[in-house]
Length: 173
Image (cartoon, rainbow, N blue to C red; front, side, top):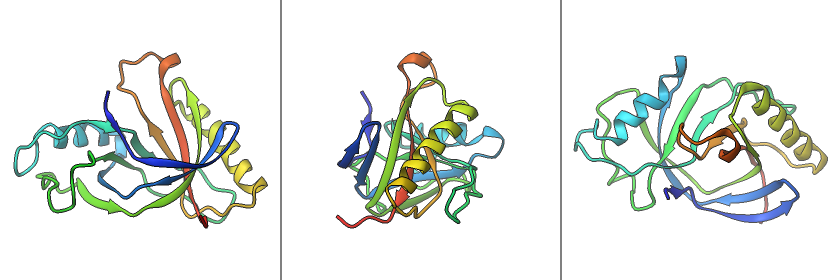
């Protein structure tokens, strides 16, 4: 079982959750042409200055080019791997590929909706629309674009796959 990004569920409402994600370190690259996964995979399997192997974690996070109902629109096409919790900015291996960037994401609150199956564009859009409607109905303000979080390796059958759409929100604990 792989390590998963750490979060606490703050509120549940059926299929929707508000979560407080802990601070995390991520390796990010552009995913233009679908090359992001391979670039990040090379990085964690030793294509870095110390030739260190980094354990795979979940989820793999990709930005979504889906217009929000609020004024925020995602224009990026990034993919990120979350570093295992034992790493800090100082101990993360330095990438040899200049397209891989290491950054620290501060604690944040996100709304999420979980779904099974393959994350085809139409299913991602349907789940994103449901989550955005729930945000609007609950008068929550988005702070960022939707992201797709995928938790399983490519060989896992669709009916067993865990996917989520998440949107960062303004939230007072």
